[in-house]
Every structure is written in structure tokens, then in C-alpha cells.
Length: 305
Image (tube, rainbow, N blue to C red):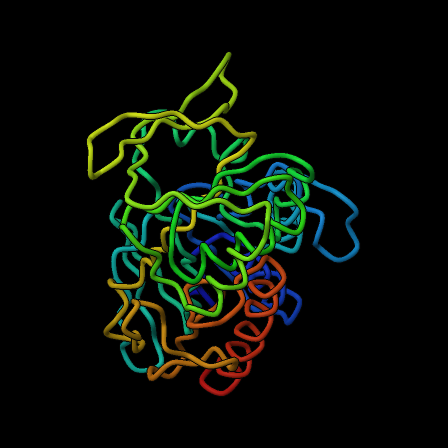
């Protein structure tokens, strides 16, 4: 029986484990794949306070070493369900594991929606990026492509256009779906170009390095190529919260509908990080959520234990 079980081993989950242990609570972190979450896709992290530069993998490894040093337990399993049985929470995994605790923090994060192209996964962090704030500086003075046409893609492209020599938007629809004000701001810039009604079909590489993309013009079926130093993808995020909707309300986009207090409708169940409805999704805001959720969980444990 643990005091707190944390579902998810990204920055939010590991920060929650750190604060749980610092408050004398037993803690188990269950992660289904690799610790670190989305941050491991960044070859360099230069916006984490106190760290000039570090790779996402190194940051994740450092955070994991820290929570292990503090005495947290970890399991590599996929959580299938969480049951609330009074003051006791029962966490079951697809591998057959059954774990019990007083409180649970769900920090499952999100997945970036991918283009579904051959070789795409291998180029993430090595020519393909998702975050202009995180990786934009690596392309200063260079040429980049942006896949997407909604608000997120437009906002990312605006940031990139401040740094890059050229930004080319690639939108599969015949029009951009983002706000008119964002479109006006972006397309007023001389270093921004737009291609609509095009579908990216292949990645162009040379000796394993990203060089550009091949796309099809929807109206004519013509295949063309465009070359650039990097590709940013902003076609949506996918939260993985559906298995836990019995415990916490979801908004229309599938995110936990929780405020800055990280609480849910179920006493003793808290949410933290990118899986929560929020405006800013960065490693620092995930860590902040982990802190808030852990301290709230500790207070809850003190009340019921």
C-alpha cells in the first residue's frame, strides 16, 4: 500500500514523486514506455532554469536519478484502470499488476500527432520538431517548413519567422483554419510563404539527415519537392485520458478539465502536466503542476491515513 501512486513518468510525474518523497510519503511512479515524456525528443533544452544547456534525455535521466535517490519506486507498465474504493485507490495495469494507494496523481501527458510517414520517428529531434520555443533557436538564419494550418501552427510559425531566414507553411486543406488575426500577422512577413491544398507524402533524407519533403498537390495530383533545414509539425496533440474519465471530467478535446489546483471530482485523485487543460505546455509548467498535485495529495493522505 503506497501513499501516492503517480501514473506517468514525464517531468510532471517525476516532480510529483520528488515532492511526495520530500514530504515523507511513499511513492510509486508507473510509466508505460520511457521516463521523460516529450522532453526526450529535444536534442537541447535551454529554457530550464539553472541549466544553460542539456539534452532532453540527460534532463530526464537526471530527474529519474533524483527521485530514485529520494526513495521513489518505479514500474514500467501500462496503467489500464484506476478504481476509487473509498479512501483506497486501486491501480491495475495491462501487464497484470495491481497496486494500491491512498492518492493517485495522473500525469499521462500527451502525444504529438504525427504525419504518419516512413522514417518520421527516427528524425524527431534530428530535423523534425514540434516546439518553436524549445527548438527554434537551432534554426536561426535557416529555412524551415511548418506542417499545419490551425492556431498552434500559425503561432509556432510566427515565433519561427522571428529567427529563421524562411518559413514555409504546408497545409493539406485549401485554406488555413487558424484565427484571421494570426494569419494576417504571419503572412504580412516577407520571409513567410504558404502552400495550401498539399499533402506531405514522404520525407527527403540524405545519409540519414533531414533535407526536405515530397508533397502532392491535391487539385492536380502533381508530386513536388521542397527542401529545408528542418520541419516543424503542429497538427494537434493527443491526450491519453480516456481510461480515466470515470474519475475526472474531460473537456471537449479530451484533456482533464481541472484548474490550477490540479484537483478532480474524485477525492484523492489529482492530475498534472500536459494532460490537463491549460494554455501553456512546457517542461517548467509540467514541473509546476507536479509540485501542486503532490502537495495536494500529501495533504489528502494526511487526512485519510
